[in-house]
Image 1: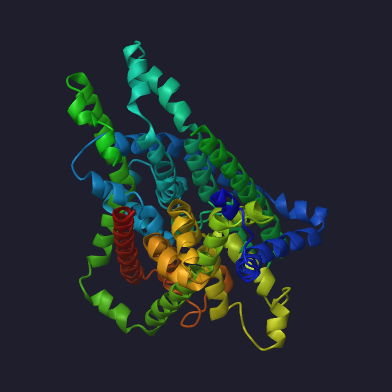
Image 2: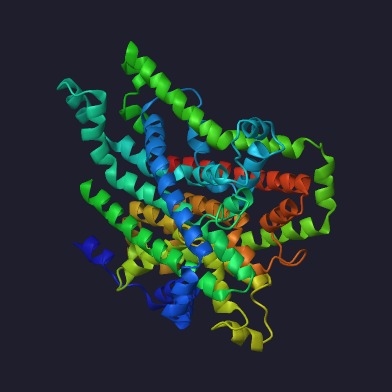
Length: 273
Length: 282
């Protein structure tokens, strides 16, 4: 079988060298330097910097927010993907295109949009402020920013799977007397699971690392509204390498874990198909 | 295609179900609109409140002009370099087998997964005056961090995966047959690529390039850390917007943000066009 043997062929050395070299310089080398600088600190200094109250608070806040955002995205993203894949309504192709908007819009612009909408000078901001809800320079602002930037991930991950899903099984379940909810839980959800997990992981890791939109809306008050990436930036600005390195290493490990999880979900998705 | 094969509920169900579907659709659209579209409207309103004057002031400001030029430069460099190297990497991943391929593939997800601040900080550690490579450059008198090369490197890092991720599936889908036919007919590898492979993947490539440009245009965290944020020298448009906001020049911030938002929406339109062309040709 010539096709099989052809697809197993070895790459020409120059091509391999150029590709691997580019990734090595641009991605691998910086990661290694961060890890090396982390090791150079020594364990005591590393954990001392990591357990500074501001660092711990920032990490905890970031983690809690990322879990919350991923959970919300999992639900709303699945429903949106389902509606886009199955229902017909006027303006659907426009909505479908707009789902990518949060990915295309620069994060700083996202932050400013939320300030324009909910800031103290805006109508909505004044209304909410009168009812005791401060959005901008407070945690609700961070949540809105993270929901905005992570919105497309679950939708774009789940939507193609819903489109591929045949209606036969759902109809069979319904004919056999299963309720809407049971059909969803027992027939649709298992088929969507790998894609849903992959999309949720993307949302989670983006929420962990998001900076531009959050730095604008959060106010960045240590121990109140300062997330981990903003904390790192502050430490860099104030020439405290230990603080920046230790929290960066933690975020780096989280990203590596997310990549690892993502690959597993994707593989389980393709083997199911 | 899928819309034709999957009967839509609108035509299928009557009675209470129809209202259920309408409610779910309306709720979804409302969530989507409140979350993503209303803020765009709020920004446009805030930016246009002062008429054209703030835009004219923006165009006349040397710092703003410098920032816009720097953003265009970094975006062009990313599109060019990540376009070429992204194609090379996509061909490697889609067409060849080699040891460590899975690791290379996973490494290409890194720029998506890592915080831009951490990305910038890693480059700062590597290329800063005391860094592993930095002191070589420093000895040679080349400034990388707190200068334009650092800005370009940071932008390259964050926008690396897009072309690869868009082109690999297209290459796999196109398959090898036509390329092999061309080579059997005596075409060299370069001619085969130019005449057979490239035309087949060009819309996928166009989509990847638009994503690269959108990401490069909007990059903030990594550039902020690497560039030193020097007004009029190493400030890109996103950094300029941030500066205006921090200095309470809200008008300038809103106007520059609207310009950037419009540019990224144009790119989004380009992506949609590329997607449509890709479907049309396959």
